[in-house]
Length: 93
Image (cartoon, rainbow, N blue to C red; front, side, top):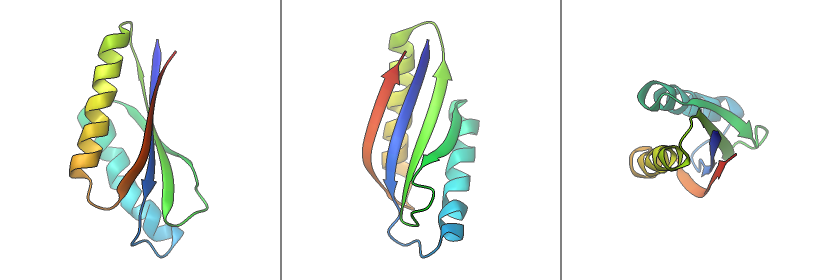
């Protein structure tokens, strides 16, 4: 099974695309390091104050994947201070 978490993020303080990517890069690295997921900016690359981040996991238990991605969602909402999470979506295939 493949599970993905999409996070639509608002970065109100970013004034350029370079600044936006500078703020997203540490988040992506931390998600990979701490939660062992693949993470990348997947949408809205041309908007300086918005981004779509996607995390992906593989596994054989849908409940475990759902739980792990919920943990990541909650961590980002509670601990990442550079922006606000506008919307989230978890899909399991």
